[in-house]
Structure formats: structure tokens, C-alpha cells
Length: 187
Image (cartoon, rainbow, N blue to C red; front, side, top):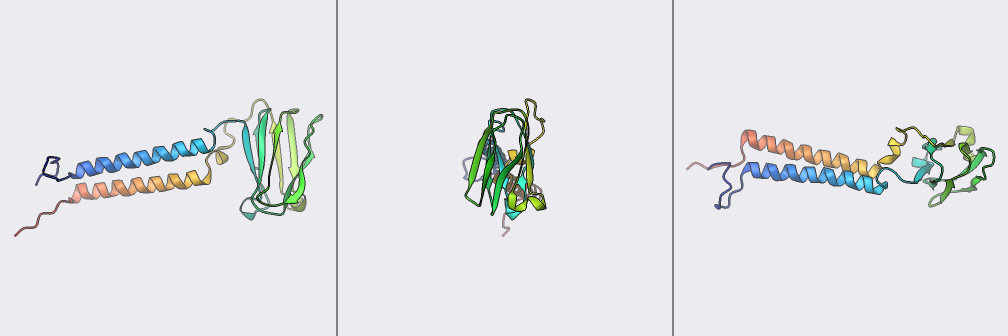
């Protein structure tokens, strides 16, 4: 029996299986990347998210965020009790933040279209342990900021799964190419 035979005898060659597996793995990886980009609006946009108390920690994530004027920042509570209390804002700014101490599913958003500069805030119940943040409104934010928030955790998990699947398929392909997979029983 020829392992490269794709004829009409109903046999499928090892190479055909390997090609199909590699194509499926590549499609899975591409789908995961596209889903991650769609979930975050393609990596750009006019909205940023600050997590309030992620994983039960007394922090804002990110603690420092650069935005351009007109960007909406959405504060999302992930644990409680927390608040967002503005402590210093540029002259002429009207941001007072959300001073209500609460927990999930609370969300609060504000569009920073006022004066450029630093807007600092704290969580009143946890200010003594350093739960503070800063939003810097500027025309030229750093280009590499936000890599941690561009790809959500679900997309990272999907990428790990895709890489694992590709590795498994390629490992099996190597095994079958090296040691064969079509066995003939001798009589």
C-alpha cells in the first residue's frame, strides 16, 4: 500500500490528514486573533476601561492611564467595597468621580474632554493601602501603553488553547510521518 495514494480506493493518505490538521490549526489561530481584536474594538477607539478591585485586590488596573481628549473611561467594579474619588484635577476641570462606596455590578464612566493634565483619584476605604490611580489627558500618549489591556484574558486563554492544539496536531503528524500509521497484517 502506498501512503501517498489518494485514489478512489477509499484510503486517505497520512499527508492529506497532516495537511488538513495544519490547515485547521492555522484557521483556529486566525479566528482567535480576530476575536480578540473584535472584542476590544480592533485595538483602538475612544473608550478605555479601569478595573476597580480586580481579583479582590485593593488596586485600580491600570493604575496610570494616558488618554487623548474626548476619551471615555469606564470604571468597572470587580470587588467591593470601593469608590472612585477625585483628589486632584487640572484647573477648570469638573470631574468629581463616583464617591459612592459600592461593589459589582457597578460601572461608572466619564468622558475626559476637559483640560489636559493629570486627574488623580483614590478609593476612600483603601487609600491608606495605596489604592490610587491617575488618568493623564494628553494629545500624545505613549505608543506602547495599554498592551496589558488590549487583549482580554479570554483571548489569551484561546491563544494558549490554539497553540496547544497546533502543537498536538503537528506532534501527531511527526509521529505518523516518522513511524507510519497504515499497518498491514502479514498472514
